Length: 121
Length: 106
Image (tube, rainbow over all chains, first blue to last red; front, side):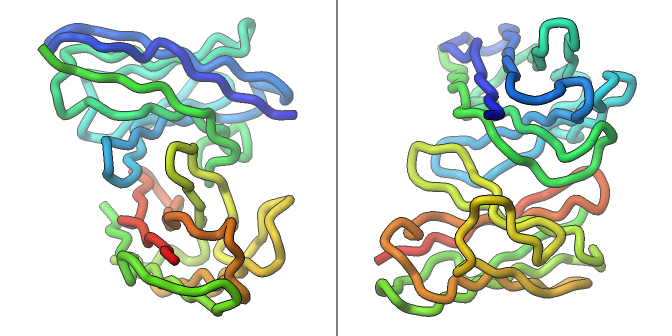
């Protein structure tokens, strides 16, 4: 069974940094691109970033480019999202999701359960 | 960026009803469209990809159609477990974008 388990979400102060992790199991991790999507409280879904299976290419939303960095460790079957200079607008549930193939570009299935990041003083 | 517009934003329906949700893209996305279902407090779940392909394990009462800019998600006979919010998403290019969601209520 494919499983994605996010961790690392917590309460942080504005301006701080945070790294989220997504532990993957049940599939050949390097064979799939991986994606981060977030959802602010009561709002819709916002795609943030995708990384290819090899980790050689990444794609990011303009809203987080330069502040968020996606990466992966294929030896640990783990996806990461490093977030810098957090603001209240980054408060959201952060989901990781699996892409259908190694190259980027596709729908997302499945999704992890999400991890909540709250940015507040 | 490609804008995805869903309508309606919410609807009320009864068990057994046929429900149709529309998603319109701001430019031609061929059939590069997915639909997701999200229940309160849960992660989104993939229903349909490539506009009309049913994800494994999804009941056959769900169906998708369309191409180009106009797409629909149909639930042929609404079941109690289908009350949720539904999102469309294009994936023809980056950034991928989602529709604003359609909340299906009792």
